[in-house]
Length: 335
Ligand SMILES: NC(=O)c1ccc[n+]([C@@H]2O[C@H](COP(=O)([O-])OP(=O)(O)OC[C@H]3O[C@@H](n4cnc5c(N)ncnc54)[C@H](OP(=O)(O)O)[C@@H]3O)[C@@H](O)[C@H]2O)c1
Image (tube, rainbow, N blue to C red; front, side, top):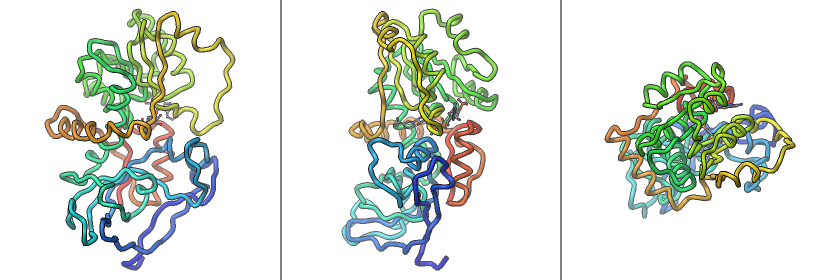
């Protein structure tokens, strides 16, 4: 690669298979205009669920057609600035959460779209979109209080392990589900009160036996049977937040035939609430500042999956790794 070009990962077509949809292309490193900054990305977060759905053309609010730039959040270093840039200098660490700004070696953005951070690490990157999503979903959608029973599914993953810690910090009793011993250990280490490995234990049975009063708040990431079990076990006035349904992202939605959901919700005055981060943007700045403060004062920890994914070529493997459930904590790609 010559020094005035960089590489990025794009979707060249829609496909049900992520690897078949993508290509790595070269482009000229752009010059920042007066209010722009040029960033060399150091790490990007892997959002395999979103990536897969986007490449399938199955995100209802997204109407672009290929070629589509991929990746979202990235952390890196400012390497050039426009003459009217006020908030950044060359050498500063910066986080971005622009759709299309993640899976690329360089990006140029308006300075207003970058957020200055003390250091460009995967941990700080994870706090920004992933941690913020967990916090906003729990507080704004789930109406999290204290002294309740909160269940987090995919609790040992990137989003889940932050949600577990936030629910604990608010003074709740927290149940976390996961599918591996490594995640079980991580969750115990993070203070999760009851870890249920769904590959070993029957989640429905555990909930019926140990939590007969039900679940007050559920942070639900998985969908399908896990969603059904959670709805079934909602407490009176329980709230279930649909954070995602990753078990269905790679497949067509499962068709179910059963009595409508109000039959389950109405008699308990329970509710199921959808969460989508882009529709809660106004909460981002406060959530971001609070998470950074909690992290710098040691109130929360960030777990980064130990597998090393290096460079754009490793992204399909990172996506498959996350979708196969092998990850423990947040999956990031290093550039
Ligand atoms: N609504 C929003 O704005 C928003 C924002 C961020 C994330 N999310 C959602 O949050 C969830 C977690 O995302 P993440 O990026 O942090 O991923 P992650 O939790 O780091 O990884 C996904 C985890 O899901 C679990 N899983 C269980 N059944 C699965 C299945 N059939 N297929 C694939 N994974 C399965 C696996 O853990 P176990 O096997 O241990 O359960 C896997 O490690 C996703 O549903 C994602 O879409 C939503």
